[in-house]
Image 1 (cartoon, rainbow, N blue to C red):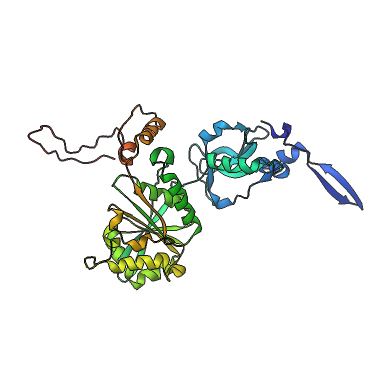
Image 2 (image 1 turned 120 degrees about the vertical axis):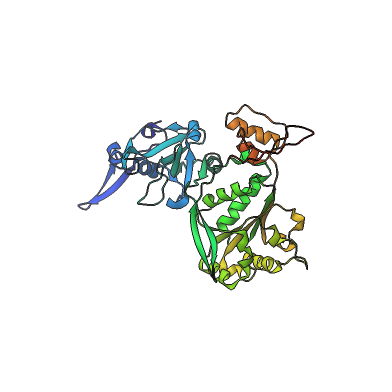
Length: 388
């Protein structure tokens, strides 16, 4: 595909006023050949670009480019200090069906003085379309939904909160969220729930997310993914032993100093169960409600994600109030058709007719060295460990 020879190219003329005369001139091919970003410059002259910002972190995977045709008008190269070799600075593809151009770079970093590369992934610099074609009102959203995604850095970070006397220390760690294909790793009813959670975390500053289900059903895997997806917010993981500290004044002071954050309370069923005379953590529930949706919520601007294994019926009903609750979802075993989709996606010749936990599906084929029954009458125990 050559843009300069396509129907989209129109001679670009500009006016020059010199010596009391107005003259018109045309930009020739060498005008863009001398640019270090020729595709951005050329397409920006003849088509409409989307309003993408440098820190939007939008990416496209190499496999999705198979549906497109590469543009060959220019070769754009630069030296990469990270790789110590010459790399392509700018790449352009054209989607024939949607008539959309996309300009890419292999450097995924959004920081001026850093480089970041991941095999098979490109950062989207801009997307161009003909705004005189009314079909693009439908084509552009479809294109983004099908091909473009938010890039999740392998260097995603979390902050673990540790109590130090009457104060809190943050210990920052890198985590490595796994790539999630929601169509093969989660049941269909979670797709819309995920979109809603992401939207609320990206655009709002209060509310509670309740995620529950059996161990291995994908709760932690999903939260790790969120830490990379929601790059605009800090994620603070509160150890179970520190959840009771939510009622302490120093904790509120910490949240005020770290606005626009997300608190993650894992395995917190003991702290958010129904308030009654048998529950010694009623103050914790009250603090969660106040931080997420009470008077304090406008001050701390903090959202809370709670995970637990207990039945939702045992959780304090105030957490489920409409307007306060962002989402409540129970992670179940993967339906057989979803599990089989996953096996097919990783080229494993395996099929199941039973519902399986996500952990069992993604770790299929690995030995777990669990206790086995060698004799129906005499059960001989075997001590071992799990391999992950």
